[in-house]
Length: 384
Figure 1: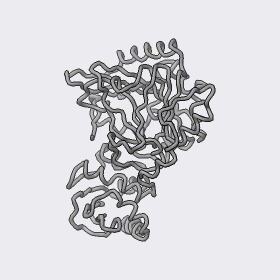
Figure 2: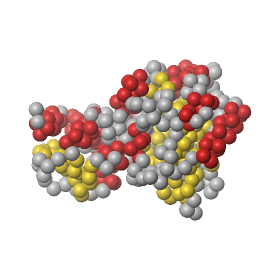
Figure 3: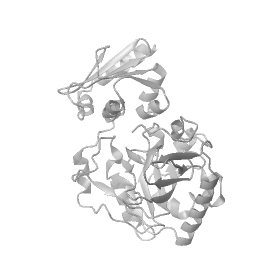
Figure 4: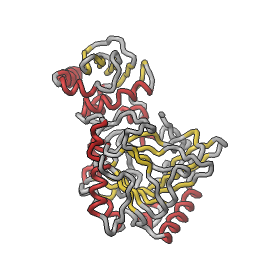
């Protein structure tokens, strides 16, 4: 079977499902059109019409035209790389349009290709009777914490680690920051308004110190991973290992402040999800010092545009103290906005827990985040 017939059959199958076409087009404006130019011989246009999407094999005009090789389009179909992952890897070309237009199509493509529903307001109905700002005690509230995590997609656990443990973690992180360099490929860097280059993430700390090597297998961390009820295992020496995210004020270049996203946005959803990211808070998290925001209950849907000021959305800004732990599913929508304070300094240690299939598929010292290293100076490109 030729590449042409394969992609033709793929699109023919999509056009037979009217309910899928209607669902995929729900957030697009009438007349919006995307044209895929696949290699030198095939083109397909997706156009928003009254009843959803229309798909035709054509080179018809479109406001967004994407040129992509047949092999990379197959990677997209297989969700080995996402649209964003392909952009970061320089594996597609936006011939016409821009990233903003492509972002409009992102959730539609997920619905269309993978059958993943676009988030809707009615998906928040099960959360109506819940206190979304509550926190839990890991020692006494495991059943309630597990229910909250599985319903909302995240959970906040109070005082899991002692003050002495946090002080020790902090000292070791500070020591590693002093040793990191912008070209070591195991750290991320950003610049602030003063022109200072600051370390904003350290990866594979488990390679640097025994305390970090044992963190993911600490009984408390394993108990938190078990709250997901998904038979999740520590990532070990892959997927950035034990890593530390550092928030700074007034960042203007590099990936430090993160817009709304899911942790599988670069690709590999079928491997990464339903993974869990567990964060040990080394500093206070609040609006001044930086904090995570979640769209509660969004772990079963595809990305959508999120208005952080919409009072009707189940948005949660999590405030934590040193020693607290947060956990969130990789597929829940979340953001890490810029701290509002002028002297923010918030560090969080993260450990990922995944199903066995990811550990089997991803070699050690490799991660989907590796595609972000497109520059040698450690200042990773931020498309948003």
